[in-house]
Length: 197
Image (cartoon, rainbow, N blue to C red; front, side, top):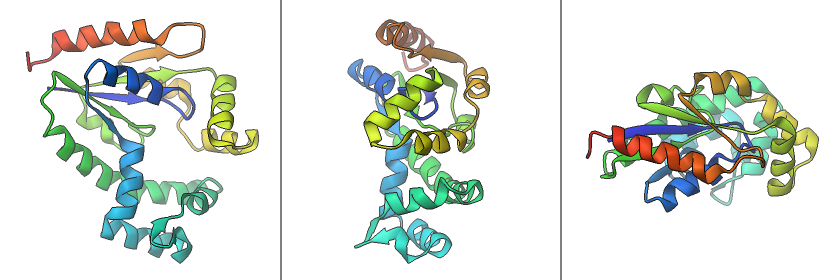
């Protein structure tokens, strides 16, 4: 079974692309969702987050995402620390999930595939590219953030051009080119390449 990574900066539309793969019957592991789940469920991870970021990280036993975001997106070192805590647990969780799948290939969707070291465990990586202005508008509309808050988050991520250069394939999601035909072409390619067939 091929293990395919799917990455892109905030607002690039990688979740939209992932949903197209799901419609085609391909299982998708959403690393960011898994990380949030693990931050609530994994006792060791919870303890480490409280130790590093304080009791305010959890509110009524649930991760206070707004509080944590306000801390880590204001300080690159704190963001790096949070990623250092969450990435190993998420990578282990993803490996366990992948081992249960039976499709010709799977998709692992993650914003920080290269930064976390997760890309090393994958066969190919797809990048989703969108111009900065489109990304900013999407995130402002989706999350109700200000332009300044979105830019802060973008600045906390790897440079988009550099990220795309590391990818094996790039899907352009610029509201000019259709995404579905680009996904279908890759789907056919991965289905042909897959050792499961």
